[in-house]
Amino acid sequence: MHIERVQVEEGFLDGLDLRLLPGLNVIIGERGTGKTSLIELIRFCLDVPGYTPESGRRSRDHAVSVLGSGQITVTVRHREQALSVTRQVSGQSPRGLRTFAAPIIFSQTEIESIGLQPNGRLHLIDEFIANLPDSQAEEQTAVSEARSLMAEANAVRRELEELEKQIAELPSVEKQLLDLAPAETKLSKISTEAAQKKKQADLLATQVSSMSVAAGAIDRFREAVHHWQSSLLTANRSAPRLERWPEGGGKDPLQPARERVTKAQSHLLAGLDEISGAVKEAQAAAAELATHRLPIDEQARKLRKEVEALKSGAGATVRQGSELRERKAQLESLRAVAEQRHKALRSMIDRRNRALDNVELSREKKSKKREQVAARLNSLLGPRIRISVTRAAQHDTFSAVIAEIMRGSGLRYGELAPVLAASVSPRELLEAAESNDYELIARAAAISKDRSARVLAQIREGGMTDLAAIAVEDDVSLHLLDGQDYKEIGELSTGQRCTVVLPLVLSHADRALIVDQPEDHIDNAFIVDTVIRAIRARGDKTQTIFSTHNANIPVLGEADKVIHLGSDGHRGFILAEAPLEDPTIVNSISTVMEGGAEAFKKRALFYGKHERA
Image 1 (cartoon, one colour):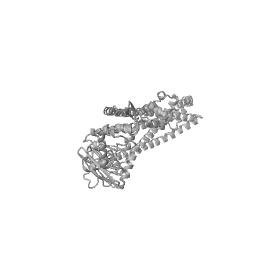
Image 2 (image 1 turned 60 degrees about the vertical axis):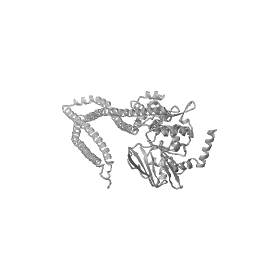
Image 3 (image 1 turned 120 degrees about the vertical axis):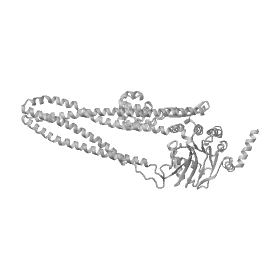
Image 4 (image 1 turned 30 degrees about the vertical axis):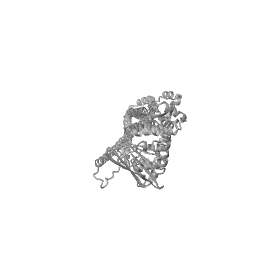
């Protein structure tokens, strides 16, 4: 893929219509003529992100300021097909098909600072990995599945806690029934009549208990179906509005898709009708059960009064026994429900673990690809430049999530979070919280068991879903051989950092590359020995676009095309565009980059004289 044409309407570069070639294209011009603006407009149009959030914001702000209310169109040549992309400041995204790999674009400040940012260094390596967005999309799908299952599991856990609180009452109910047994035995001996009425009352109590259990099952069914109905109603309200295909746009290619969407909506509405029917039937069942229970309750009360009349206090005994048996039946029913919930929870955790396995496998593959890229670059750029990848070594995000979970716990999370993040993985911490393995956390973080148990309790309280999604990214280290020792990029000067980053950037052999003023902070010797060789190594089929003030880049790089920009202070425009050997370009380079023909002649005379000496 290469950029074939750039057209700007309105703004500082209004009227610009630039055609570019494969190979090396060099943009020259005095400061303020729009070289950087042109590059930032291309980045804006193709929606190429910055290498750090800050550089991305600066690039967009620059493009917006120079484009104003106008628009930019970039035409690319991809597999013998011309594709146009257009964007306005008011548009949320570019218009046009993006079936090609976007060019790699570096602003001047990104070259200088990207090596200082962990995510920037990682981005440098990731640019070399083919199909990385697809791999990341698969990873995010697995992460979303794990988060969803984790949220479901947490809801089931909370339900189980409530169920188990109620089930814990069962031993007490059974003991009360046992304590009541002598009184019930005595009551049964009062008289044949009282015993008969007691038996009838017990039978009615059994019926009432069964009906109570049935009523509980109906209520749980209604609540579950109603929750599902609410979710589907929300989904139905968010159904897409299908716009009509524009007139004059030819045959509507989306018609089959529209029919499928319409069919899906009709299925959803039919499903909602079925669910409404189920809710009504459940309500009718509850009403019918209540209707049947009412006369039984009334008959039971009448029998208790009759028994009480036969024996003072007998009614209270019968009533208490009836209430206790009803409660026991309810609690035993809840115990069965709890077992179902435990089974469902185990299934959710198993599925969650499989999703997390897929996440880890995806991240492991990505780390291996990064290591392979580093090895390939080391063989190409070593020994002067050395690159290494350390797996899962960026702990700052993980530490921040732990600190947020711990906030308000009184656990001194400021000092604890970094230690935990460096000691265990998010998944290890998640599984330790689920199993309450406080000994593992105590050993890993070198804290007391009591403190470890409090940490895990805090995580269970509200942080497990967050842990399921955390990615601890790899860390990329860049080193430069300075004398006999390697220095990490953070220890280098601005110029030295550029001498590390530029060769990395120029090592892309299969992607269009755009760099704004790469020569700043580096000397001519490095440009001639390293940058020019790297440009030539990219070949004339791979597009390279540089804006520069350094004549060595277009001249020694044997530029396929040079674009000379000028400005009247209000608008930037093209003064000349032609191959390197064209007289107008020779004059442009001599004037803008060499200080004029006279200055060039004097330097040539100086170099020749000292060479003869």
